[in-house]
Each structure stands twice: as C-alpha cells, then as structure tokens.
Image (tube, rainbow, N blue to C red; front, side, top):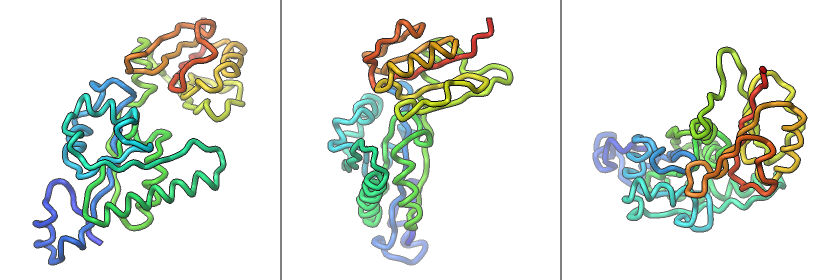
Length: 252
C-alpha cells in the first residue's frame, strides 16, 4: 500500500511511483483541538482540518460531539467535509472496550483504503488519554500511515485560566485520571492534576482535604459554561464530568 500527504495530489503521486490511484491509501491524522475555546485551536490543526477529506470523531453523530462544535467555530470549512462517526460507548468491561476499538479501527481503515485522508478530531491533545491513541495503534499495526497533530491540553489551559503555574523549579507533576480511581492519597512529592474528576467528586474532595494541598478547579474549561473554584470547599459534589483539579503542595 502507498499513502499520500496533503502536499501531493493522489494523481501526481500515482504517476510518480507508477501505480494506480486506487492503490494509494489515505493517512489517519489525530487532530487535537484544545479543551474548549475555539481560539485554542492551533494553526496546524486548522490547516489539517481544511485539507483532509473526511472528519471523524468519537460519537454517534459527529456534528453533536463537543469536538466538532468547537472546531466548526474556528474552521467553518469543516461543514463541507464528509463525516465519519466512530461510536465508542462508555463501558468498563475491558473486552468490550477492545472490541469497540477494533470496530472503530475497521471503519477508519475502510475509508483509508479508498485513498481518503481522515482527520480524527479530539479534545485537548491526542497523546493524552485520547480515544484516538487506541484506534491509531490498531490502524498503524494494520499497515496504514498515522500521524499526531498536537493540541493544547486541558491541564495547561486550566492552569492558565486559574493563573497558576503547574510546576516550578524541580517540582514533579503527576497527571491522574481521577474518573477511574484515586487510591494513592496524593502522597507523592510535587503537584497533581486530577482529570475528569466529576463522577467521583465526593471521594476526590475527601482525599484532597486529607492531603492538605492547595486546591483549585476548572469546570468545562474554555466552554461557555466554564466555572472556576478556589478551594476544596467551593467545589460542588455534582461537578461536571470535564472538571480538572490542580492540587499543589502547601509550602506555607
């Protein structure tokens, strides 16, 4: 199989290497669009959205995904693209998750085999707890070309929104998906980022109180309903799924 980039047309590449257009496969791009504010979409991400043939996103309806609703504000040309929904149900059974990832990869590979480039849009950065990374590995192992287009992470954007540095001097930084489990009591030296804390908020707040750390939180960073909290006691137990907590060592 041969793949082509947006730099060359499929027709030119086929002529140069002596194959037919049908023998050329597309490239899968994981495009990070930032956490919520359309102004956080990078020039590179916007360029790739304009240039790919198909836009994919994890969900039943691409246009209803948060990623699409953010991207369309910065890159209105996305409305003219062919859309490919990759439905990934929120389940905990590992076998079921693997099965869904394989199914999603097969859907992507079918389109890539038609010689179309796909932009898989994802919140934040595609290298950080992203659905894209799971399907990308399968697609890549199956012989297709894949690439990552970096985006602004939710924890960097949240730190900026709160006006606090994530780490200074030699402070370690620990990034944990609190939505799954948080069982280490925040005992390590350095600062913590707790991502997607909403569903476990009551338990997370108790651990934070016991840790004695300075705590701030951003709910729905970059979106129209963004909220900021300056302490554990301010944080509601029913906080949104996209809630990010920064817990820093208390050195006072």
